[in-house]
Each structure stands twice: as C-alpha cells, then as structure tokens.
Image (cartoon, helix red, strand yellow):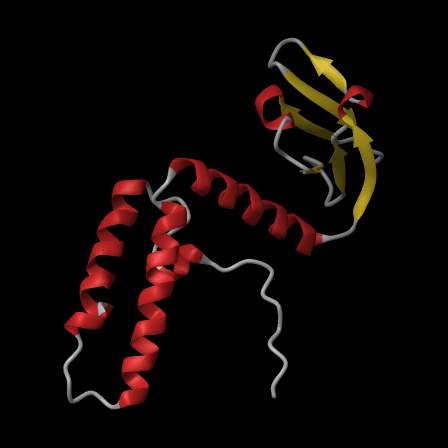
Length: 149
C-alpha cells in the first residue's frame, strides 16, 4: 500500500479552475459548468468503468469545493488558512507574541510590533481575532500571534 502524503490543504480554487481572487458569482459559473461535465447522470453509458469512477471522484471534489467557496463564511476561513499555509512554507516562526505585547496604532486602528530588521509586523483590529501568523513588511520573518483561550 502506498503511503498517501498528507496534503496540507486542498486547493479548492484549482479544482474549480478558478483564481483565488475570483468572486462568488464567478466561482458559481465555473462550478455549474463543471457539474454539467462531471455529473454522474450525464455520463455516457459506454465509458470505461475507470473513467466513470474518476469522474464521480471529480464530481465529489467539485461539489466539496463549491460547498466551501460558495459560502462567505467558510470561504473566508479557507482563505485565511491558505494564507497561513503559504506563510508557514516561507520560513520558521521567529517569535510568539500575545496581542497585548504589541503596540496600538490609533491612526489606522492596528496593532504593530517592530521587527529586528527594522521593519514592522502589523495586524488590523479585526484580523487580530482570527490571524495566527503575521509576516514582517520588510524581511521574511514571521511571528505567531498567540490567543489566550
């Protein structure tokens, strides 16, 4: 049995053949087009069994992708997670901080912390609730925002 590598996170956008910046109505169009192509009821009966299997798998994936991306809430969570996965692949976390260790910037309503390179980590008040990783605006260091549970 081949060991299946754990994918960190499925790329639902590429399953729909869409760009991560696509809006929901755009995603819906792509979804509907794919569903027509892959729907189990739309398959020709003389297709080889393997193909039917694959198409059913594909259909399930397309359906899952739409369940996640077609809903503002789950889409936002997924986008955040994608963003974090991208950051994690960039490099190691340099430090772990709690929000109260960061300084408050009244002007743009954000929390910030100076990086040792002289750059700045900053996160808006809204994002601070949800974000776990923040990258420096100058170098490639990342800090992890810890939340008191």
